Length: 450
Image (cartoon, rainbow, N blue to C red):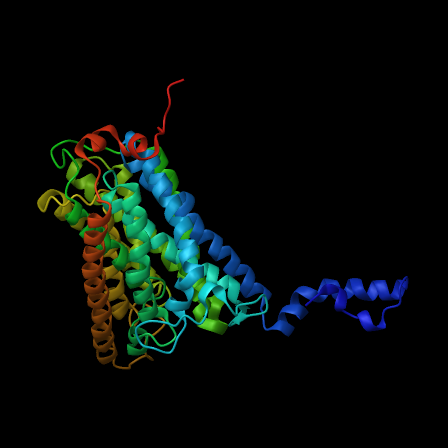
């Protein structure tokens, strides 16, 4: 609504009373105008904030977290990859991504009715918020998911291959799974899968893709015998803190789907997210402390990410005690998964994307089937009611969601990598890997001696 239209028909130019009336109407406009248009100012303000927080997770949060973990000769390459994926995913999302991932009447893929956001105007609504805000919020999820995969092939993939792979993967893997779980008539949604904020769509997807990429591309030169230590843990901890704070937008922002319960569910989701992150951090730290006699900074921040990723699918459906158990389990299980992948199987998932995000996503997606009905979960039946039947049924549904996502992602990721390899080659040469991707791919260095 145009503010100048309020009372315009009765206002005389120069009238003091008319000006006072216009000022009063303007002061009331944020509530009255939104109500008239179907918007809610509080809902919209929160979703704008949540959207900014989720974007903040990728740039700069994940970018700094990953950049500090690689060797100094590759720091710029990781920052560049995260930044470029952010830009590319944004354009793909407005072109076809939003329309295919969240709109349509089919069971497996959406329609092209909203290509390039055709038909979405300033007055379009999604529930009680502008559709433009909903489009942007969901875009940030489409950005961070392929950015997470960067950690699986860090320090050895060509930049051109990374761009092609990320674009095709977003179209063929992320968008279909997103529709299955969150689309209007997605088959997993209709089946009753609970994935509040992305256990399947984001974390299992990214984790499985990273594992497949690591296996397909092979180990970095010198792995696992030569140490490949993080070059700047200060940078990593800074990024980790940004991820923790940004995750409140990720999980609490997803409560928008709860309609009238947005603020209640958002508050609960924020609380359990924080509890799980803290518990995951402490669990991972304690394990390292017992094993190596000293707790590591890298361990505590990795445990935090494990706790956050694992609570994500359950954050709108569990209580504080459920979150505490989920977080502690994440720290322990993801820790031992990391040891298995790198030390036993010698798979060079450079930045531990699969054992942290993939395993955490599976754990959290299954855990919601238990803790939604116990430990204060919001789906808990009335006192004295049988919980075994509903719990077992939900666990079966959750398992189907996990398996379907992992199989689809694993097969398609391998095919995409194979095609990209045939087109441009996916890996830099051994000499280029030794020199470092910063100089080889971008002709720059992260640190210059002046």
